[in-house]
Picture 1 (cartoon, one colour):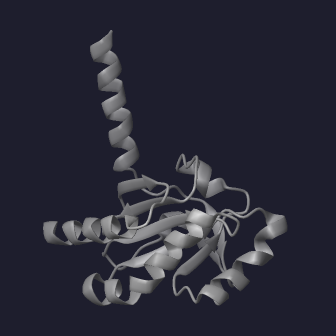
Picture 2 (cartoon, helix red, strand yellow):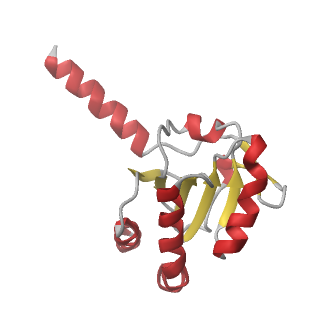
Length: 162
């Protein structure tokens, strides 16, 4: 019985890690419709980071990444897509926060948490790395100062494997 349970857990975790992005229709910060299964970075890895305007750790994480984002892009070509899970009544707070913080990321809005649920996201901040083939290869929940360093190391490792 124990062996079967372990096998099931391994298969389940593996399926979560190497899964393709689900197809959910969202809007970007400018109102353009985006299908999540078409998100890409021209064959390069990209990061998806779930956040909310009211989430202090989320904002600290995105601000920390913002400070090094230009360097990351020059070095690796990585792109970050930040997905707000602010509910519809608070969605109007997203653009002012993004503008105030001068975040240069692509911003998507998930007011009904459809994308969040489809990926099994329970708590934010929640970060994914998607490889150049569109497969999820890394997941991380929460934020402590310095976590962004792990993200860029994961991206560098992915690029070395190519």
